[in-house]
Image (tube, rainbow, N blue to C red; front, side, top):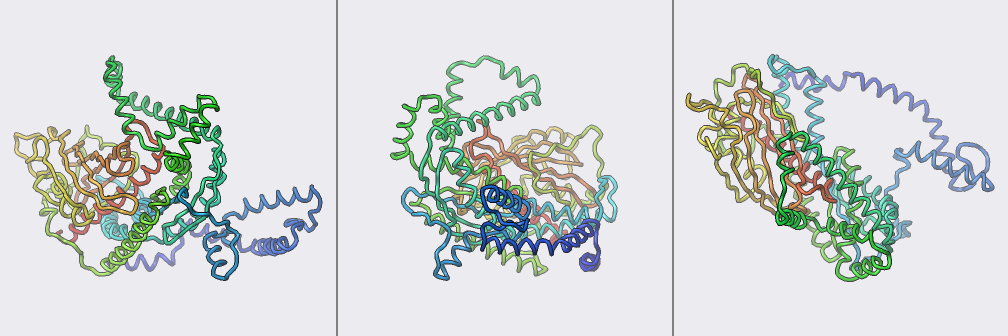
Length: 600
């Protein structure tokens, strides 16, 4: 602890290479301060005299001068677009002018029964935790690792990870960065949503209706629809999404080998093909159904599709069509947020249900704020909270020995998104027993019920060798190779949030790898009650590697599977999955570290 304290104090006084480069850049910017001050002065003059040229001391009279001034404005916008001085917060500007009794530049949206509300909640991504762990474990100490030679520095790194994972939960629950992103994102959507939808033939009016912390609401009215342009854009998107899905299927078949190709090449009866098609149709989301119908209408004559679309829009399907139009541009929003290392939840609601939805969102923000404050108070105290007992089991002497990787063994590849890589100060065999053995209640009680607040938990047993899987010692008649492929099921009720109601999750656990060097547990989760839950399967994987000396490494990853192809909101599904599973990954690491610290 003394060494950690000294390092923390000395870190402020030591400059690494990146910090020296940053200082050099700051000195360059200081030299340019006079230049930028001159530009700002010219901008003030430009407001008083529209014909004033910003970069040249001459008037911009006539057509040529006006065109030159337009190019000057475009160049300035590109050069100084990220400058804080040039940022205008439409929401704060409107509130300030309303408080002063003036009129806002922003045109207010008329609220009626056809108004749609875009609700966005920005959250910290698991990337925040990964960056912090990498910074502590690699940049500040050692970035070269050799799992077969566990040095003192690596031992210290394990200790640092165990302490850091406790702060990871605080990093995820903090809304400081999401709050800043929400300010920028709300203004970007306000400015870009109108031209983006105009490309699709949809004219709208919008305003930032409300914003608090990481949550904001945009009110949107659809003014006019050019049905030909909307049908053409929808048809193009549907065909592009289907082509990408078919390419992904072909790559998957090539990876699976000849057996899968032979199985797919077998002739299928017409009844079986019709049943598969019917199942695919039943699992489509509302947005995909609307998109498919519009794509089909694109092949008809305008004398047919124009009255059909107008009749549907102004009768029974108007709300569904408006929700589809807004969802069709949601990918751009998610791409922006992902670039910032954030995740977000998005909900498009009608006017009739917006008030209740917004109230639930504000309640969730207050509850998260209280929970974050409670976690900070618990972190400030040295004692661990909510300890149910020695659920990790006793320490196993064999975990002290050095770990040797079998010659013919390869660690299973992680899934698409690696959420967390963590070094834990707990023995490999001890953790294997806590996670895999049916006599252990660590997952069900310590993790699911106490930390994650799940309810109605049922844990099944392995379909074979249930009494031996996870045991530190095996009888001579049992071979651990036989454990591969073992399955068991469990289910639990996940708590509700502002965007997702309480829902049941059914998991199937698979043992992919099992030996004294590594074990891998893969989970298949089905959540049909969540939005679009029938369109995807959530795969999570936990790989634990034995690093000897009562330590191990935990690698958590997640990947979505879309059996019938990615839906229109596939990026939204991926973001929600990463956010939810990322919080669970951190809870797993935090809970293991907490119990190992309390019962070494």
